[in-house]
Length: 610
Image 1: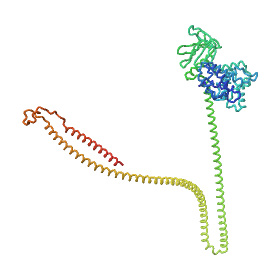
Image 2: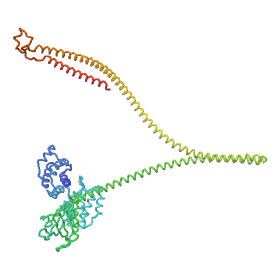
Image 3: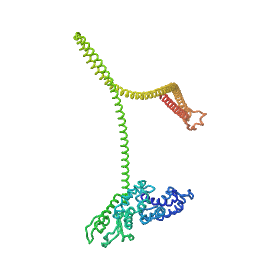
Image 4: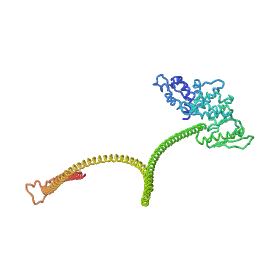
């Protein structure tokens, strides 16, 4: 599935390049040429008639990508075998078709066409598995950083951030032609030699697309002659191949790498330094690097390949791409969760403000209640002051009366004392009234709360009453239904009772008939016995009459002398046939009686059943 997905990305570019009118459809003649070229580079046989048969109902009209996909899958991609073709040739075919239409180099700062092709392949490898193909900013930064690391320079992050900030729509990803336009603009490659850039692009291309984890010259010790020879080594997943030179035309051999292999560092010997070996189950291969750094890089890369084999992974960069994609998805999920949390906090803030508003309304209502209480207090104070003024008037009158009536002072002292006591009682009464007013206000507030609770209880009681009435109606319906069923059951029981009485009467008649039949049977048996006795008597008489008279018998007759020597032959007993017939009749009658008795018992059982 991974190979099919990679091939489909390149074929998508070729198909869209043939769609000149951008209608999503391509003519059949162009698809024939494209299919033939794809079969050629993929090293599979081409069937020119299959396309015509597949689109027989489409006349000569153009074909959409959705219509071309079944043919592409059935006749081309299903026949592709990994390792049977050169993928670089396949990519070059699709690049040639799409570059003519879409690639526009812009002068001196443009990279060579070969480097643009490699960037296109790298873009396809790192792009998202969605159409149209785009590469997210994180992958753009990763690719450009890999190229800069190959040249030992720092990536210009400022220019890259400015580019994405100027075009916000590209935050979700850019297409390959925008990416090549960014590279050709020279903003990110300012001051870098073109040859160094080409070498870096090729190195990254070999590493990511061709799965070349490391390559370079190493000294290798021979297995037979044990001599040291310098070879060009190329490390890929599951294999370490070595060639005569770096053009990789003359391959001398390969070392299979799997989970059972290991790499070890060796001490210097035989005049070689920076040595290490690769141990497999069959052989041990000794090699020597140019320096300690190269040995460390080689041993780390080989250990990485062995780890991938142990984990069942075929490509390091495919695994890294999936991990980076998972990290992006995790960041997006965390971002979405953070936004959701912000929305929740905003909702809580709004709810808090709403509650504060409600609290303000409650405070306002409390202030109004306090104003009403103050008004009541002022009114009570006015009444009290008025009462005090009245009392003062009374005191002045009393003083005037005392001045005018000195003689009556002694008499009025007792009354004055009573008046003072009365005033004290009035003041206490006033305090009691104030306390009672305060309690009344509190009682009114409690009454309002109780009324609200009572209204809520009344509403609940009304709802329960409705449910009770509904249940009562259902119960009445159920009672009516039960009464109807009971009436029907009573009628059915009466019907069955009448049927049972009729069956019992019928059973009695059958029993009487059975007794009558039994009496007839007994009479027939008596007659049969009597007939059998008669038959036996007549048989004896017949035997006596049929017995021949021998010579010397006393009873002889002259008339029978001529027949004295004649012997009557024995004859069959006629009573035997009568007995057999009578026995057969008895058996038949007994069978009929048994059968009738069985039918009567079944009828009685059926009648007695409810």
